[in-house]
Length: 185
Image 1: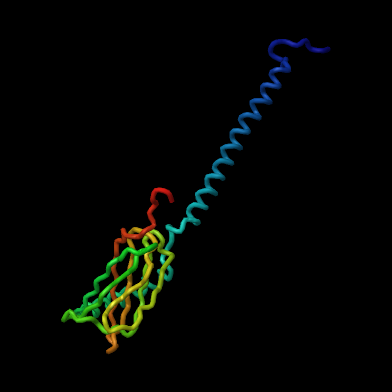
Image 2: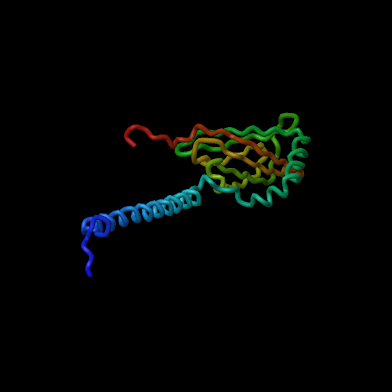
């Protein structure tokens, strides 16, 4: 005996098509949202690891271990009574670091050797180490070393001709580089 189709047991063809379309639509929405989540995660990882401004200082762990020794060196340097004046000087392309190191009497220190370590706070992984030339005028000059405006960390380690060591760390705000857009460029 065959059953006659009634309202409760028959599924018209358009209901099957509508159900299939709804399953594709809602299933596609779920798959699309999951794919969007993965894409956003990949973009976030690329931005976090590819941005040079989100960098840790090189050798940061060792510097943290040597922090007490660094502070002691700076304290001994302060006891010398020496004074260091650092100024950024504008140049053709970039600004130049110029400094004068004087003793407690205001006389220039005879520099035997030394280094300047410097980095822009927005590019902490890009540390520049610049040797200081020996001179008897206490002058420290580094040509075209400031490549961008902003806050720079300057760390100076100098030894005079008598073997006395001077260690100094300073933040320096540079607003004088010539990397500004001008009309026609």
